[in-house]
Image 1 (cartoon, rainbow, N blue to C red):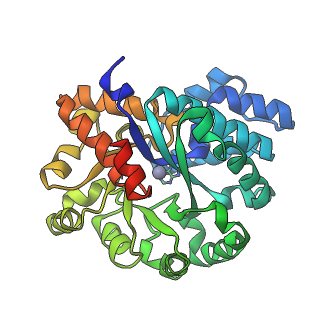
Image 2 (cartoon, rainbow, N blue to C red):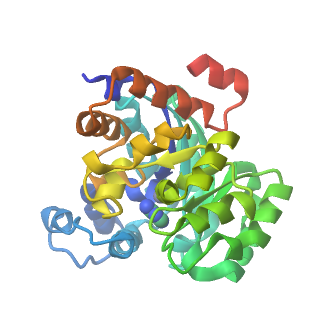
Length: 323
Ligand code: ADE
Ligand code: ZN
């Protein structure tokens, strides 16, 4: 097996809803009596060709409609953890989208019961420690985010951080300052997607206005030298998702990924899978595809793996034990 697959690593940018494989979509549709607009598993898989972030999000929200019960969320998370273990993952910080479920009539308590039932025993069953990060859908706006923050209050014991995702352009991070301030004051970790399709200005806002500890994607930072200097000086990690960037056409091909320019600027970069069911690979496959396309030395892969633990929200002693 290749080094990219076997290296012990942390996954820090993973949407649990983006791990649903077509077979599970059909299995849960049958179990829950949900009618799907696709005839077969192959028919669904053939649609995994995207023009941009929005064309992906349309299918992502459509397919997650099969997730209805706590058991569905447990099965989804168990399937991800089993796969992640095969890819060397020892620690996973997992995103979920509360609004995408509540808006379909699935209670937040049902979602969290299902997720935590799986995560509770992840370390014993899969050798993977975990954290859970609730993301706000930026295209629903800051008022909805605040309302969702209120609904999260009874469940904060299960939630380690908040994030910001979904359609980026036209939804700048600064709009979400009130909810991020509340989350920081409550002692939660804060991260945000920025600079995936959106401009470097959004990355500035994520760090300066939201006070994020990591930037999710952040690849368009390469367009702004001052921003690269700032990210490098502060050691603010970017959770880069190479296969996602190519599939969503943020980058024309893997061999032209801006990652080498981020590394040259001294930015702390981690490698992640984003929505692995949709983008053709889990995190280990992101490592191996990137190594092949960019002709990276094994030492660079080892650096990514070590930095994934350094950029995690694990306490220092646990982090050091994994590096
Ligand atoms: N939600 C799931 N995947 C996402 C991505 N790559 N960007 C923004 N929102 C997302
Ligand atoms: Zn993402």
